[in-house]
Image 1 (cartoon, rainbow, N blue to C red):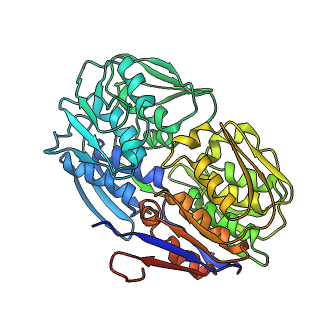
Image 2 (cartoon, rainbow, N blue to C red):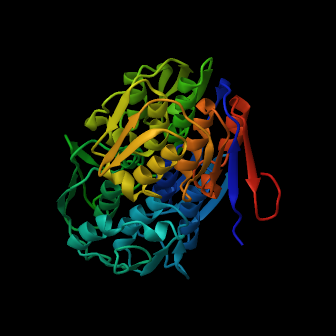
Image 3 (cartoon, one colour):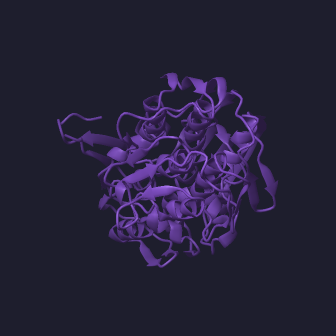
Length: 445
């Protein structure tokens, strides 16, 4: 029986001290995928030991890859080469991980064996046509449900995939990455053009594994003429996880924190840019490059925030951080308006509607729109909200407690373990008054 986890947050407090949040989830996924099909042994440090990344790791073990660890964020991958994966004996279960499912569908479309990809209830409700339709243009054979959702039944088309020149209708790093991975097994060149910049971890990491990727403006191109050579990867801290504390320290008067070794890839720093536009006091210190990725320490002190119209060009660069940015907007003076973010409706939950519902329940003036939200800053009250099983919603409402006038109870928080199992301990250590309750056996967590 699955355990049910509830967060209970007492109002007020401030954040103080230093912390290193866990490794970047996007890079942890990709290190396993590319390390598995590389030639030689890849060593990964800073790997995120959370359910989503572990689902990817298990999938490659199920396809015959010998992977040691993780132990304290260290993983050793004995690569089998680009054509060395073996047919799994059963369906690959990917839990709650949309990244695993979407990227693997591209990687597996060109294999000489068939696979079935399944997930939990939440993942099984998420749209997959955005990857299966362009993959079909390449000759991939993938069956979905009538709604275009998982399970995905992939009939391997080894040697049959054809390169495609695809212009994405919506900016999505997962779609781009999926097609580039499929392009490693396709005849001719595969090119993907994005309408706005999205995270480029796949392109950077392919280059790190010495696999040629061509970049021309907003177009990325790849062919099957290449091999991956094992390398060492040091995964920086995940800016999406750091974002909760960036906002928390910005809104809680008297806060002063340093977040160490955070990845500041320019395709991921929208959250810093947006908070700075709102008046946040965020300093970027000790900038350096680790394994091809820019890294820095982030120093945050509390400052009064002002509402803004969020520039649309920053939206794809902060797409995962909007749940907690909505909390920042609720604490800002004046109105904050977000548009151009319709992708938020097809994440682990409909993040626009779920956040609007929760904020309204806490007394915040939040109006959802088709592609965003309009929030009038003011006081945050207390109450009982539900995360709808969405890890980022749960953590965002926990951070809201720093400025709440009464306790906040957040239901359905078990999926925090998919991306950030250390959240509750780190948050408490920095000064958030959070208690975590497991209702299955009555033990607190």
